[in-house]
Image 1 (cartoon, one colour):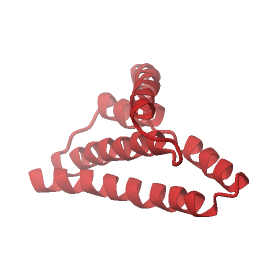
Image 2 (image 1 turned 135 degrees about the vertical axis):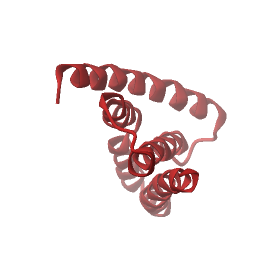
Image 3 (image 1 turned 90 degrees about the vertical axis):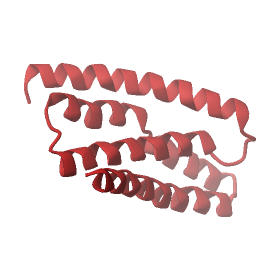
Image 4 (image 1 turned 135 degrees about the horizontal axis):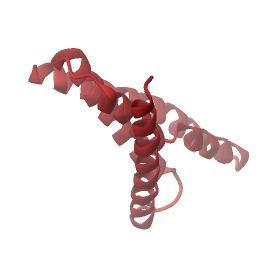
Length: 126
């Protein structure tokens, strides 16, 4: 990894984290509490973006430091799977077994589906 790529990853990681903060706040202000919907929105949209970027790399031969920085930096800074698992554990601790199971399973299913959709869109566009 070159110094330029490392700097881009760091820069876009910060942009991704700031974007997550804004999106999370916007969703929390509009959604009833109970399930960690804001975290799910962030992780699903981030997975879609990384799927689109991976598809661009696979089907359109897009490469370079900007792609690496976008996938690793922005998407890594934007998504927050650790928060999703902490929220799941908190639901378990509160005795909310169904909500915890829905959160954990939903997180996996929706994020993988979003990433696959992104790759599929780019394959279709090829």
